[in-house]
Length: 83
Image 1 (cartoon, rainbow, N blue to C red):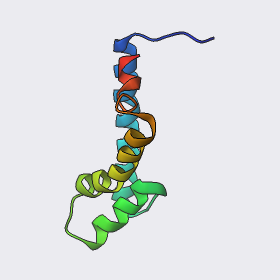
Image 2 (cartoon, rainbow, N blue to C red; image 1 turned 90 degrees about the vertical axis):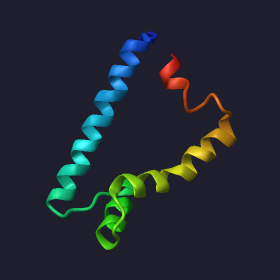
Image 3 (cartoon, rainbow, N blue to C red; image 1 turned 60 degrees about the horizontal axis):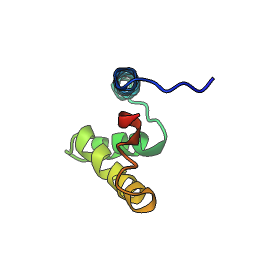
């Protein structure tokens, strides 16, 4: 069942998904566990430096964002919000 969602539904899903992932990362950080991927690497770098998690996570994901823009065009990162 392919159904286009409204902008409101897309924004709600994006917000809820981001909040749940953030909550998971916070839980992992509180008990000194590490997760995989860029979030795990960012947690590790945060433990051994004085940088904040947000700064490190943004810096680690920046190459992927740039790659998506160069490979798929400027409209690619904003496409989910516009549907």
